[in-house]
Structure formats: structure tokens, C-alpha cells
Length: 338
Ligand SMILES: Nc1ncnc2c1ncn2[C@@H]1O[C@H](COP(=O)(O)OP(=O)(O)O)[C@@H](O)[C@H]1O
Ligand SMILES: [Mg+2]
Image (cartoon, rainbow, N blue to C red; front, side, top):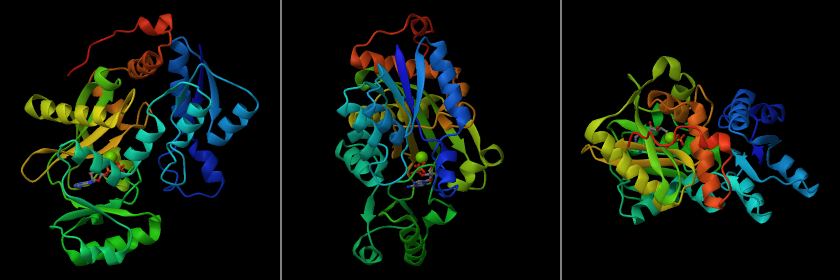
């Protein structure tokens, strides 16, 4: 089976003059090579495509694949993660991971939290603001948290995102509005434990790999800086017991309710009463085998990187009713910890 791979290489965009921060979510060659190696070992005939521009070029030339393993984060605009899934849908080419609508809703933290709130799940109060004048019109309590509405990898998030009064909120909002060219989300500060839940599968077939606590020493916020220095500033540990069950229950309800597909992560934090609360969801979780949170969680839970990619890909094949390569079927099927 011919498996195309779409991805955004960070180095390509750095060459175009974009900054380290602007390209923070994009991938290193080592990530692509690691995924390619595993997909080959699972019995797929892998063809590296590259980014959306390369995909367009090849599609125009008439090249087709049986399926595409898509990890394009895109680079500009709120539909950047939807672009490749849209193109593949248009050409009726099956692909791994979520569809364009899910990608767009999940990238927009305000729309996403509205949807989660509509499902009756805990996500704390929040407001989306486009300008400084709107700050005066909203009702909120302090401490609050402010961040760009559709970024990832901690971009635009620092210790200053936690604001204790209206002046701090005003200062941070002015700075973020001028730097990020997008609305902000002002929301309830969640002071408790932070966990991320790794999920594989789709719809009623989705299940948790495990729940990982992100322990940050003196820093309270898993910011861009902290993520960059995670080896020195962060410890990761699997969560057990009641907290684990609460986190999995909430994460799976959010994952299934939003219609996320094949694999990803849900980020949660406890509110001031200790209740597990939804923070944000990642339908395109980082897949660097060493440094990304989902593979780190997998290692702690006893899952190899190969096992993770196998489960993700099998979920996509099953959704499209495509045949699973014989080698993939041989991997252990169901040692999930939920
Ligand atoms: N409402 C909040 N309360 C407390 N901490 C938050 C809140 N929102 C975000 N954070 C902190 O900022 C980090 C990054 O925020 P998140 O929304 O997950 O963005 P990203 O998409 O960049 O991962 C979180 O992991 C958490 O440490
Ligand atoms: Mg996050």
C-alpha cells in the first residue's frame, strides 16, 4: 500500500525568513525520518510528499496515494491545519488524522471551548476578544489567563499570561494583540495539577494510552520557554488512581464529542476546587519520537513509538475500510492502560 507523507519542515520556512518562534510547531528532518522508518517497517510503501505546496504540485501532475499520513501544521491563518485535509478530501484520497472541520475548531481555542461547554463538560469561563476596548465590557475574576486564540507549542504564552489584575491583563493583551495578529482568549486560571491524556482511535473506538502529569518546579506555566528547556525544567510522570480515571473520562468525552480521529492529546488542568477541567486539544500532536509529549507519554506507559504509529494508522485504515498490511496486524493489539 502506497502511503504518502505530508509535513512542514521547519528548515524550509526558516530559509524563507520566518523566525524560530513562528516555525516552532514545524518538524525536524529526524521526526519525518523516524515516522518514515516505522511506516516502512509496518509494511507501507512510503513516499515523502512534503508541504501543501508540494502536495498541490504532485496532485496536478496526477500523482496519487492509497493513503496519506498527514502531519502538516501549516503556517498562516486559522485554517492552516485544515488545508491539507481539504485538498485530500477534494481528491478523495484517504488520510490519517482529523478532518478539516475538526482541525479548524480545535485550533481555535475559543470555538473549541464553546463546543466543549455545549457538551456540558467543564472548561471554565472564557471570553474571546479582538481589541483592547472589549476588555472593559467583559466580566471576569482574577487571577485570569490570557493567550493567543489559535497558536500551539506555548507560542505567546509566558509566566506573564497569568494575570492578577486588570492592569496586568491590559498590558499583556496589548502586547499579544500587537505581536500575534489574531484574537485573544481570556479565561479562568486553572491553578491545579496539569495533565495530558494520550488517545488513539476514533469515535467509539478511541481509548486512552495513559495520563501524564506535567510537573514544572517553580514555573506554573508550560510556556514556550519551558517547553524549549523541558529537559531541565519539567518532569513527567504517569498519573494513577482516581485522578487518572477522571482525566480519561473527560478527555475521551471531549475527543469523541469533537469528532477527533486516529490519535492525539487532550490537555487538562484542575480548577481551584480540584475538578479536572478541559484546557485544549491537539488533533495533530507532535510526533518527534524523543522530544514530543505524546511519545514521552507513550514511553512512560510502555508503548513503543512503533506501537503508537501502528495504532494511529490502523484506526485510519479501519475508518476507510482499507486493508491493514499483514505486518501491522502482528503488533500487540490491546495492552491499553485505561
Ligand atoms: N487557563 C489556564 N490556566 C492555567 N494554565 C494555563 C491555562 N491555559 C494555558 N495554561 C498553561 O499554558 C500552557 C500552554 O497552553 P495551551 O492552551 O495548552 O497552549 P499550546 O497550544 O501552546 O499548548 C498549558 O500547558 C498550561 O501550562
Ligand atoms: Mg497545550
